[in-house]
Image 1 (cartoon, rainbow, N blue to C red):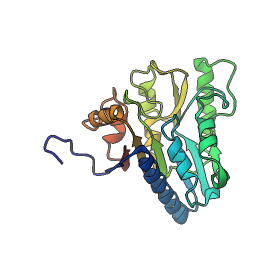
Image 2: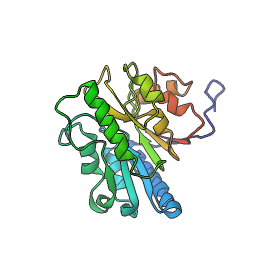
Image 3: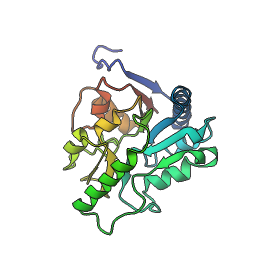
Image 4: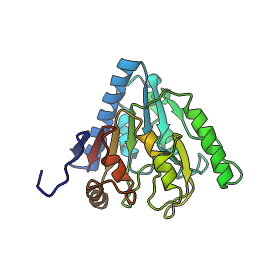
Length: 243
């Protein structure tokens, strides 16, 4: 480590890959190992996954891993408030790219089944209450949370500058809602305390732009870069997967 580089938390491990395909393979194998360990120790494994385009290759690698999928529960890290047949639905993404073949035996818990007629603040509060109630019926804490990151430093749907970001960073319930300023659709998201209520966080980052943001976020915890709050904490081990 160079003298001017930040000293990472003792719980931070970095895994560089030579390509995005290699990264997807390495991360999928790591996730499968962690899930098998959880099944061996506790009889069941719980994982929360992120959406977007970035995890597709990893999902398709993960679904081929040897696992007792019937003993795995899959949760979402966040979700856009769109119908499940919408092209930007994380629920649709997980069902299409992860829960196929043997992996279809996993228990999948989306945040909601249908949307209300309007997405007013009152309606979003009701959606959060229902999602928290749904989550309470499943094992907690999680065994693994898989996160991505945007070039703006957001992770999950913890977007910098969002009016309800403080609630998402310090909320008492596992799930809250917010409306990003620079991204479409209201979101439901796990709060930062909920994200940290796992045995491991795995952060996947690919591309020069995101790498630059990651290097900045490693320097110190800063709410203007929400991912930095994941990287600069000592509560939960973090593995970072770079390509």
